[in-house]
Image (cartoon, rainbow, N blue to C red; front, top):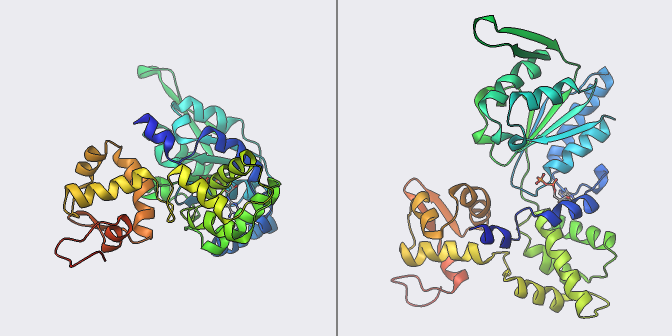
Length: 339
Ligand code: ADP
């Protein structure tokens, strides 16, 4: 299972961290798309700056690789603030969070990635910190235990999550504004690929850009990752300019098809079609048949398959659409021929 995770090109890997940093937009004008979010965010930030206050706490949610972390950095830059970065899984004990909170300075921005993975105890410490800038610490044990209350400087929490529905209600209600990041339009992904190619000093023609963008699952991180693989291919084959054929050959080597589906995506669809007659099939049964984690199926594979109309979620379970049969070249039962 671990191998499968490593193979999936749309998940975050070690090398992404380095390249994410190199290609991450550091100015609003380089942050392509998401216009509504950018506009609304700017209003909030401008108003806070005018009042000379920290902004309200902000929540960004959406699929991995859509630009939540990048936005957090842009918010910090706009507010001329330090950004302290941590994540839900990294905060195990209340002491971990207390250490971060007591080190905050006035105006700082605290970024918590994967906020849906914060544990209950940490959330309990976070609530008063967010609401009244107080840190309540319990000192001692048993009957002699007492609560110590520490004042915190004004700060802004920026939280990111792929699963807003898993955030507890009380935590969600502490954010002054919530922004949903959507999948990008193909033209926006093309613009991102073009910009990244420039930063990587890679000559690439328009047709190759279209091929890469089409296989990018409407996701900037995936686009950048595919572009890097194309660059490797060009280097190994001594190509001066990346053309359509080079882009297509690279995708073929990676087993990424023209819609950006990887082997696991195709396997998921073919299991529904071949083992469960097209569905509906329950998510747990599907996870067992695919030997993959239910959360990963729900978080990573399904949203994109639904977005491109190959999968439906119904109350009775998951169903493959006629388009899924068509994409995999499988005949629909009872149908005269291939659709
Ligand atoms: P997330 O935090 O949602 O997983 P990131 O902010 O880490 O996503 O984005 C991943 C990479 O994708 C960034 O390093 C950046 O190179 C690229 N990226 C994301 N959003 C944009 C955007 N709107 N414009 C240009 N590049 C982007």
